[in-house]
Amino acid sequence: MTSKQRTGLALALTGVGALSMALLSPVAQAGADEVRPECPRGLACDWVPAAYQQTGDPADKETYGNYDTADRPNTNKVRFIVLHDTEEDFDTTLKIFQNPLKQASAHYVVRSADGHVTQMVKGKDVAWQAGNWYVNSHSIGIEQEGVAVDGAKWYTPEMYRSTAKLVRYLAAKYDIPLDRQHIIGHDGVPPTTAAGTRNMHWDPGPYWDWNRFMKLLGEPTVPTAPRSSELVTISPDFKKNRQVFRDCEKGVDLPAQGSSAVPLHTAPSVDAPLFSDPGLHPDGSPGTNCAADWGSKISATQQAVVADHAPGWTAIWWYGKKAWFRTPAHARSTTPTSGYVVRPKTGRTDVPVYGVAYPEKSEYPADFGDKRVGSPLPYTIGAGQSYPGGGEAPTGYFYAPTIDSSAPFDHTYFGGGEKYVTVQIGHRIAFVKASDVDIVRTR
Image (cartoon, rainbow, N blue to C red; front, side):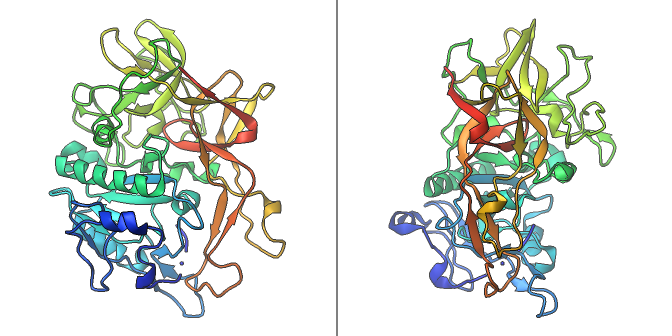
């Protein structure tokens, strides 16, 4: 999370345009400040603004919450939509985002019981929601009322329908691809540094039905390539894919139930250790069946590149290594898919992977002091490996350290010339320099 500026009713719908204005829901309820929510027609929405307020000494303009004003997409592009769960009830979540001391917010909150949507941060502004400042700067965050370890009970048909309508509207407005490198869970957000990996979140969790949701978006998983395709989409049936995970924070096993998650092993055997994310388990210890251990599982609708086969098993490239999962002969566990994959250029043996796409240090003004640059994550793409992706990631850093933009460079977006592309390196997306890789169309 980070920082802050310029509000006003005239800017409430910056960048929406006449078409989007026409699409605003006739039942969208303006808040006390008469701001109307940015929602699609027919979706019940209201506007309850998150706190934008200084919380400390007036001389210290860095102490404030709960979001940053910006001029998106005129400055930083909106390229991702991040789905969360609240871990609180709906009303409590709204109160949290209205409390500037909490230093947290999201653009939208969706209620479980009826799918009602409350917008709390304007789309032009940057909500503090993803745990990665680069992703915050280039995304819309949607909180969904629910508790991840409680299973699917919070994720109602009404919630799925409302979130899907909202995501379709936002994807059209900001030209965001409706794929799983751009429509991601909080569990798909990368850390900004290797050291931050263990602090990342894992919601909406293994009980969010990604197959159902992507179908509602109009992007169901269907074969688009021959059965021999190297690129596949993970596609287990949610209800039939009954898994037992553990709530490791409470030390209890969760009931066997339908899930989007497929366990990954280090070898083609159920007795083989679960895959270990090197960022989450830097000591090399095996992965776990903890619901929060994202490295040991892949999710329905995520794509992967096939690395090997064994009877009843398939290996994929995953965080720089092979990861195995069960593919029984008559179960539709994967779907052959046509799309783009990212491979190291000839002669490259280890391509570094980043959690941000920031400019090079030399691209900032000489008198600018906070020159953020990316540092490699604990993963690399080795020779012979391929990963789904290839979509361009905006290169830039949004500098907004205070609630007052009068300071030099405050609330400035610094673009960069180095081109980055997005890859599905594991359960989380990440970024690689386009100059390090080839982007190849598979069939």
